[in-house]
Image 1 (cartoon, one colour):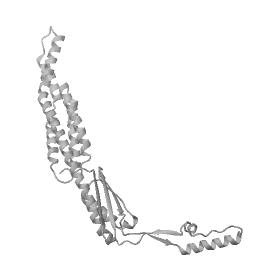
Image 2 (image 1 turned 90 degrees about the vertical axis):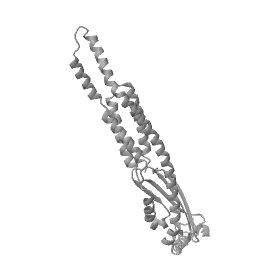
Image 3 (image 1 turned 135 degrees about the vertical axis):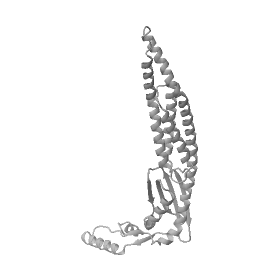
Length: 293
């Protein structure tokens, strides 16, 4: 089943001690790139978060944002640095001795604003207890990403199949048209030679050699067969399970190679038009494949 690399998921979980909110955003990337942003007191859980995420989302740039729920029982504590305060006060006493005319203001609000007198301390967090609450929220968010990826993947698969069908139809028209190109070239060459050498007998052997050379140079049978094979292989791959993005990317490159060769050998307006159509469809498929896991 085709899975996109684009997705979003949100998960929330809480217990009698705390609550968590997990938000995950995923976009396409050649490899796996997981970015985790969480409060510092949860750093011990980052490796678990990464491991669970990597097991579920194999490719893509994954951004994970973890925060405490506003209703969390985790509260911060304000700590007074008594030793530093006493040092400040001694310094103020010395200033009073040196400059007795200065008015001293020791209001509580002013003292509290002095640097490093007060600090906000996060209470110790039990890693296992936190994980028991965080894990369900992470699972919920990952499931949301997977659901969106699957939905987007289904849409991509349908659209790619439509484009492959368009390529196959154009390839069929080229295959039907190709045999006539050589015959028409022979007719044009005969007419041209007749115009230039109306008094001289036509050299059939020379004409046949020239036509054979043109036919060999313009032959696209092998390219058409390989293009059809690549199209069928892509259709089959879209039904495979697992990570198929890299395989599809390889197939579309091979399709583009065959289309370019057919175009370079083409000496016919109708074939050229269909080759342009094929290459346009391949380019669109290439862009879509970049977002498949």
